[in-house]
Amino acid sequence: MNQTLRDEAVKIMSIFHFYRSDGNLYQSDDDEKVDAVFEAVIVAIDSCGELKPHLPYNEFVRPSRAVLEGDPGWVGHFEERDNRKFFLSDVHDFLRLFYK
Image 1 (spheres, rainbow, N blue to C red):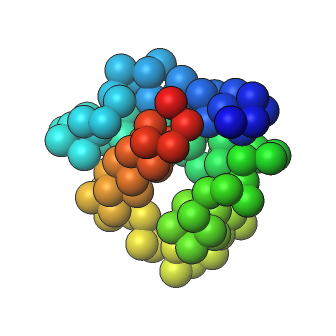
Image 2: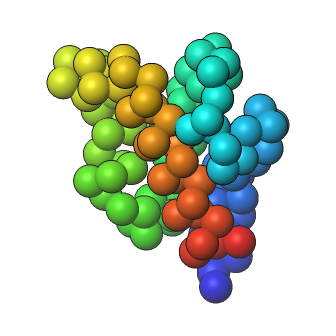
């Protein structure tokens, strides 16, 4: 595996570790933590380099960019915390499966 891809994946995974949320974030009742992890992860996804083309575009890349650009449809979608939780859970699981 390309070391740069792995390094970028580890960088995103470290956000989950920092907030001590790993794969169980979908069970969290801590809205502030969910919001903080979500914001950090979408910025990390949008700003990654070589990893970005290897991420599921419609599931991770497109929504991250759209939220950061203020797209009302995506912003509204992610106002529902369950949608944030499932998104984060999917990102975590994908990176863990393919880049750990």
